[in-house]
Length: 459
Ligand code: B12
Ligand code: SF4
Image (cartoon, rainbow, N blue to C red; front, side, top):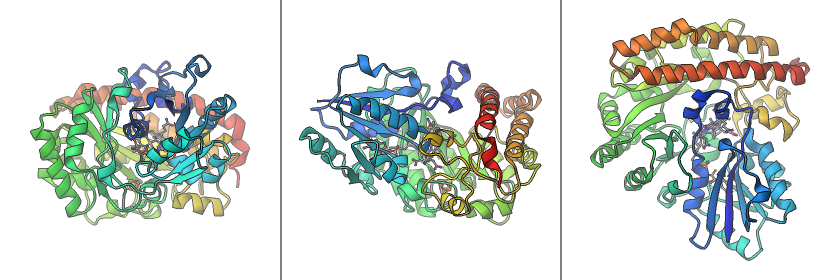
């Protein structure tokens, strides 16, 4: 039995445009969900993982599969449906899973043979069995998996050419920020994988560099942090010789022992969501954790960097409190906090989030010809009507922010300060140039977007 597992591409996602910017070579990541699915699949299936981000295969020229599984974030949904229709026209059944089909079940169910909602661990073997017997149901619900049931991902199935391997050690987030899909999809309970499984899986990864995909590697309570420390100790003891980057909340900075253990375990960079430079903005998106009284972001960032860990800060433009000038304000805040890289995204109502419900009910979802418009839901396009910023203004704020933070002068200053602090100046340089070149790609894309959709942004 032949199974194709497909990760659809979206050419509008600038980080996958390797040909247009060679820096993006460092930023194409492995589709871990499909590798986990492969880990749940029995030996009677011959599995091929096809990642369209590495080039779109000529499916017609390939051997006919018995089953196709497609994953999709919202931004990949259109292409997922195109690929599904190609295979269904050949009479090959198509199963779709992942966050988009979970949040937009009715839309997906019309376009594929079967949809798996939620996490697949509990239902995938049944799906395969039903496919083998030609009795696929139109829907299976995996809910939230037991973390001990998460299999070792099949790292062997995706060959070289990726700069980073990928692994997951926890799922779920209790914080439920208004714009984020994680709590809606993976639940509010923070679930941790058995440490022995994490160490074993790390050992299976061929790449030296690894992305730990957890939404928050360390968690938010004392118990979570104690477990993170235990995991870091086990990773250090296993002498994995990996260098990894992860996402975490700002409390990562509050515990020197945690930072030291993370470095021993291989941590080299951390992605932190600051979201807004003002307490009002944090309140608006519900990121209460960053509102802790007396939090000094600059000191927190510096504490992390002192352990030779790079810090990427993420912010959002387009909140209801954001007014003209917000772009410059974010660039200044990020420079003041001292982050090594800045990632700024447009506030985007993703289906299933609290923000989606709010904007939908207020008629503020501007690009709403679905599924066609999903391709713009990359967080790098303004797709909504923003309270104090017109389409032109919100784009201008983004451009102004990126131009300010990624000016050659500021990049040179950051690289110099990395050198001065005995941190990794080369990594900082590559990261900064990569963001800078994507900024140029994004500017071209904004012009196209304005031509097609400009008039929809008016209230
Ligand atoms: C790692 C990651 C990335 C990486 C790698 C992506 C990749 N190729 O895997 C990078 C940095 C590239 C990335 C980029 C983006 N990301 Co991202 N990312 C994540 C993150 C943190 C983890 C994903 C992951 O690997 N999970 C681990 C695996 C095991 O879980 P899983 O994929 O959900 O798979 C399970 C189930 O969903 C299911 N399943 C999945 N696929 C399939 C398929 C079939 C057939 C079946 C049966 C089951 C099934 O089974 C799996 C096992 O249980 C998630 C947050 C999250 N917790 O999911 C955000 C997340 C998925 N990303 C998000 C977004 C918005 C993006 C971007 C659009 C935005 C951006 N500018 O960064 C881009 C788009 C990229 C693209 N190509 O279109 C949103 C998506 C929301 C949505 N509705 O689409 C999320 C949920 C974060 C959030 N804050 O809301 N991302
Ligand atoms: S943005 Fe981060 S902290 Fe907020 S709900 Fe999502 S994963 Fe949790």
